[in-house]
Image 1 (cartoon, rainbow, N blue to C red):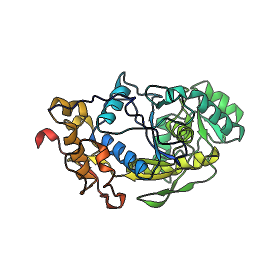
Image 2: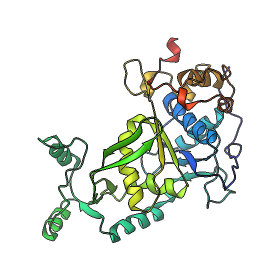
Image 3: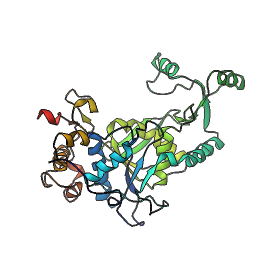
Image 4: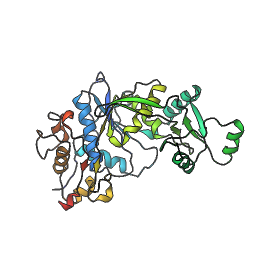
Length: 330
């Protein structure tokens, strides 16, 4: 039996009344097909939102790394597994897919940057990635954190460096750490540094766009892989500076290959397209995901993620990564 979807984007639009408090979301980058780990995280985000009576919204993060047709395939794959989503408040309910695309949101990012600029919270940065890497690898450097090289440049220094390369814009963080609430990690305090909000090619950075769009879509619950837990304090702090209420987080275990590395498409048949070609059905994929979470009381080989809702218990989730074996080797 092959995998296929007879549903449309319109079929996956669900009206959960505007009075519903807050929303969960899924926000893939359209760089290629979703693999099993991506699909599992999407289903977990959907389950946690729906179980708590929240809306669930979809966003395509297409500011860069866009592969033609990838977004459409991602949405179709999610639909085929029973994931539905709601319209973003303020958006046209007649739109056919009810999906927010970051590429349509540039004016909102402009406004957010201007607000930060007016508050004196941004500065120009001329550093290359190599310069930052060298600075943070030096004694007393903090790996992955910006060392503040361009924070207090003089006008003459800025003018000189601007002749070499255009600047990025960085946040002038006023604290070094921030605390967020995570469903699984509990109270988590992490480092805050001077994150980029606009790259030197003019593209808005992920950390800014995700914060602005989560607020716009009414997102109060962010579910994603636990490799992004350390990013949450930076993003929550930026949200607070913009006057937004930071969301609550739920960082879930990743899917790994048999070598303990993050699952990737090179690890065999791990996307729905590949699994369809190999003759697997939606119920097979959903069964693997059900067992990995686990949801022991849910029906085996379910037809839809909707079949998980009645039985899903986040307290019973495994804290361990999902080790994925190439299905063709089973």
